[in-house]
Image (tube, rainbow, N blue to C red):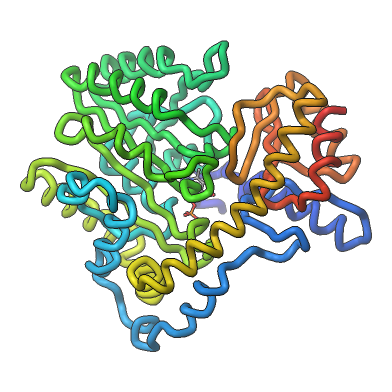
Length: 402
Ligand SMILES: Cc1ncc(COP(=O)(O)O)c(C=O)c1O
């Protein structure tokens, strides 16, 4: 007798992306020439996983007792301090009001934001194109996802549509939790400009007296953006402090190419000291009530990579080399995709790009038949350039355009 609760009885066991990638790998192992643009891990052009040598070496220097012992519930204080400083090295006013909790990857941070800034039954607000696990995280916690059209007719972030939804959420549920994944949005590849951030901040501030509004910036890919200063957007967010809840989902997965280490953090900027204490306590409580505490060895490694000047510089250099590899693919994609007339958002860098296609289901099936794997979504196809060798980008574009 199936004793699962009815609402969980039809849950899919495999995620679409992992299923498609599995099929691509099986066909490749059987001798077929395959382009696998499904998975969001950075691969070298030779098909091996791109891993920072410095991080991989330092991992083996983490002490035995750090791997063996429990971490404090909310994470080791030096890890939390290092992550906060990583974001706010140029924003001491934000650093002074930040608190944090360690989480297993950015995913854990998103989970804590949903459980602590929405009541059960309420809806998270995000862009119409969004990372699928936002839905899973909400399903798991009896919350819902609602979206606003991401792009206006001129291809910019549709700030007016966002504002309309802010108003709806405040009227309907008395609060807003907005997730924006930027820069290098997954799945579209879009990176907001400073002006777009400023416009979003203005709308959030204008709505703040109608009820509690919280913004979470999901920065999973922020060190891979196409702009010179990956932290520049933080300047635009300063006016929110004390008026709008400000959260950041930090992740070591991409930033230090250690996806399986499961290190991340939820960072909150709270102006009032007592409110900050309450926020930190609620996040810590959530840690205890879900995973209890994180992997102490992983926290120790990432703390060292962030705070040891020599190691931090070595990681920055290795990341720059990976970024250059990715940028070469992005440039090739942009050149060829424009020639073929593909429709896609402004793409300056990052792991993914999404090509709009009305016949997305048929096109996806035809691509798969031709050995080119990407991820279908309503009205579009997501290609993970992070896992496609530069020499294969032409074949990917050709298949997308056919
Ligand atoms: C948009 C987005 N947010 C967050 C994450 C979190 O990743 P992790 O939990 O490995 O840090 C990912 C990973 O793919 C992502 O694509």
